Amino acid sequence: MISNSDKEKYKQDGFVILKSFLPKRIVQKILIEAKTIFANQMTIHGIEVPDLGDSEKFTHAMFELFNKDFDAFVNTGKTVQHLISLHALGVDQKLVVLLKAIGISFPNICTRPVMYFNHHCLAKKKIYHTVFSHQDWRSMQGSLDSVVIWVPLVDINKDLGALQILPESHKNGLTSTSVEEGFGKVELSIKQKKQLISAEVEQGDIVIFSSFLVHQSGDNITNNIRWSCHFRYNNIEDPTFINRKYPNPYIYKPLEELITKDFPNIEQLKSIFN
Image (cartoon, rainbow, N blue to C red; front, side, top):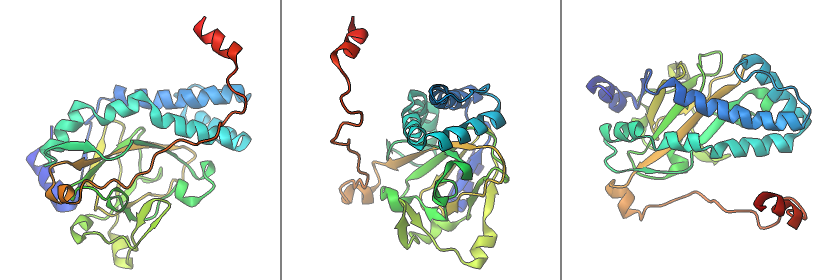
């Protein structure tokens, strides 16, 4: 599952890359299902849907949808966050066993998983494709041993914007000075910027890291999308988490108004239930 040397690396560096940890079929299923949902919107917008396995052509179709109907693109992006396959991975027994192996004695989900599909042509703000250096604990505010598991859905090298990590930065505590767009921003010195390393990974690999580890997005200089997802976990048995009454900083609520006016009507419902 995880070797003693990898456990020590995690403690020392604040992260570890576990090669071929997940079956590629599980990761590929999530990716294909996400692309299928986007493809549904491409179809009704008159955009030719390429083979889902053709990364370059599908990327260009994504660009076209983004430019043709931004609202549809955003809503679809929200919808893929609720894939059953995505959520199932977050509670997969293999991940639970891993969490316990590195010391999370009673793993608990911190917040919903997040799927990313990053490219500068699919964003109106830089932060939506390249996130500055930050610590996840600032937004999580959970147990001191809380962790993040980052899963590449495609092979991600430096050119595609591999995760950039500052080794051992988890030992410096909370160094985030402000929160911007939900991220606990950390200002890096020139020396620290030079110490950043790129975590190049392949489909099936995972990166597990302390929520205090300072990290940032790499620059995607390719014509392809960087597809990835992450999962966050707390330890229910951390005494400080217990003493702080299990704080939860996340807000989740529905809109009060109807999104689609005068929908649904009786005839539409009859077509479902008859």
